[in-house]
Each structure stands twice: as structure tokens, then as C-alpha cells.
Image 1: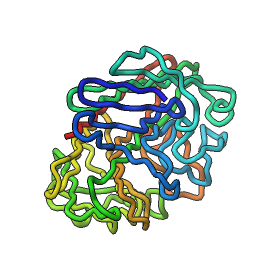
Image 2 (image 1 turned 30 degrees about the horizontal axis):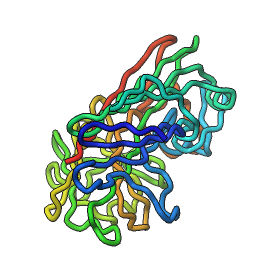
Image 3 (image 1 turned 30 degrees about the vertical axis):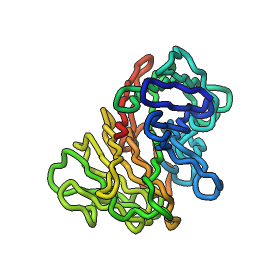
Length: 296
């Protein structure tokens, strides 16, 4: 476990998956913002990195041109040990490369680098994907942070809402079905008013709430009954997803910046060179992504 801290915050990151497992305010009761499941029964992850896939692939496989490869849900980056480099007191960079196992299911040479940097407001996350191969590299990249619902007994979301900005027109989402796939439709988000969305378990019991308004830059979770709130600034990630385990009334919610989309349900595997939402890098090309979380 790697720990970084500044004069206000402390974060602990596991080398497995380069996953943030703890984020605390050092001077306000050491409150833990990141979900940890003491029972192991609800969700054992905390802040996984999704690469090179977001969501589950149709039949747990995908295509590159006419060849089919297996792919587990959300890819493989969250399950491998990363190398930490360029470490200082308040930031650290983790790097993941291809290995013998990944080349069997994702036949590309790549570098994925993620930097966590503490700021006066919270945590800045920067990432770079580099294609080290001689052929175009398709991928999706997402972050899946789970935030505790502040002092709410039994996972109750009452009096919590999400405010997103800016929004042009109505809040909309990608249609889902069967969970966790997209159905190819864009739907108005029920219960929303302008840029406000009341948070309920009923809303999240239908699976992921993947917002289709790509103009959104910020999302803030807050309650009129509590002074703490969290803002996710999406940076240059085009999509924002909300999730909590279906039908479990879990006391956390994930606010997830995505550069990529889950599969649309199909009887056929999806060709990643033609998949909606994917990024495709030319040989030796690098793409940078960034977002930040403000803890108030």
C-alpha cells in the first residue's frame, strides 16, 4: 500500500489495480470518503480503474476485425500489480504494461500510466495511454470511485441529490437492458428537474445510470441535512455514470468518469475498431485524460 498526504488529506493506494482504497480529511475527524466493505458481502472494490473495457462484453468476448478474443467485465487493469514511480509526499504515478497473460486476450503492447496528486481541494487524477505497438490500439478507460453516503443509516439516500452542470435541455441517459448492457436508445432521465437529480435506490436499482449529456463537466453530490459534499470535475472524460449495487440499498454511490461505453446488447461480439465510444490510437500515439475530485 502506498500512502500520500498533504497538509489536509491522506490517500492510500494499492499497487494491485493502482486502486485508491482510502481518502481521509486529516483535520476533520479523519472521515473516510471511500467505500470499504467490512463484511465483504456488498462490493469488495473501492475505486477500480477500467481498462481496456468498460462494462461486460457480449458473451464475454469481443472482436478485432474477424478474430475473437475473451474479455472479462471492465477489462483487466484492476486485477494486476502496477509499478509505482515518480513518488513524492503528495503524489505518485503508477504504470502498467502488457504482459504474457494480457497479450493472449488483448494483443497490444501498451503503457497505461495513472498519477494521483493531492491538492488543497482534493485529488487530481491524470492518466496516459500509449500505443507501443505497430497497429492501431482500441480501448476504453474509466474510473469507478465509490463514495460513502455521509452519516446515513442503513444506506438511506433520502435528502441527497446530484447536481450536474452545464446541461443543455433535459437530462438524458443511455437506455439499459438487459443489465448491464445498453439497448441502443437515449431516454429522458425520470425524476430529474433541470440539472438536479434526486438520488434514490429505486433510481439505481435499474442498473447503471449512464448520462448521455456529453456537455456535463461537473457533478456534485450533496444533502440539505449535511455540510459535506463531493464534486467530480470530469475534465476531458466525455461520459458520466452513476451506480450502486442493484437491490441492495448499499450506503455508497459511484460517480464515474468514462472515456468509452458499455457494449450494446447483441448476439454478436462487438468489433472494438468500430465500437461506439472507443478511442483508437495510432502506433506510438499517446492520449491523455484527467479529472479531479473535490472533497468539501
